[in-house]
Length: 259
Image 1 (cartoon, rainbow, N blue to C red):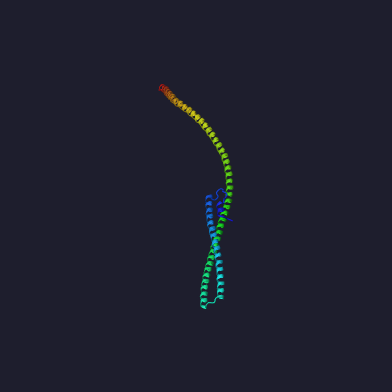
Image 2 (cartoon, helix red, strand yellow; image 1 turned 90 degrees about the vertical axis):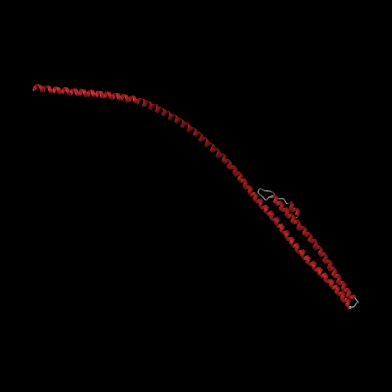
């Protein structure tokens, strides 16, 4: 039989993400207190019911004794009819009083029976609450097992992701090293190309300077050659003119001799 102490002492296994143990314990203690109060009320009602049963039996016994006494008195009485009538009325009043008292006892008995039924209903409801709490606890236990299995899968997946992350990190580091080496090689080649370009520019600059230095000399030489050619042309022209003059004089002499 379920007792208040058994409810208080009930223990549940704790699982991941289950019910709050403090709230469950507090609820069980509350149920135990209510169950204890209902048990005490039921015990008191049973005691009162037993007392009423005893009183009813006593009243029934008194009623029977009074009726027997009345019949015996009527059978043996030698008094006047008025005295008998008065005594009968008194006995009837006493009997009516006993009947009223018996009726009250019956009503109280019915009230106690109703309270007992209410108590039983409350007790049934309390049992249903306890059973529902146990079912909820079992369901939470199942959910907890599922969550724990899922958590284990997530942990395994996390380990796999960590391993994949480590492999990816290794690949990234290798790529970074390759990029750094490529960058260093490219920078070295660029530096060499820059040095070669600078050397070529310097050579071209020196050649240009030498060419610039040589051009005035060549220009001077060309000017000199130009002057010499001009002089030669002038001399040639003078020679040609002189030759023409000589030819003219030679042509005039035969004409004069013929005259």
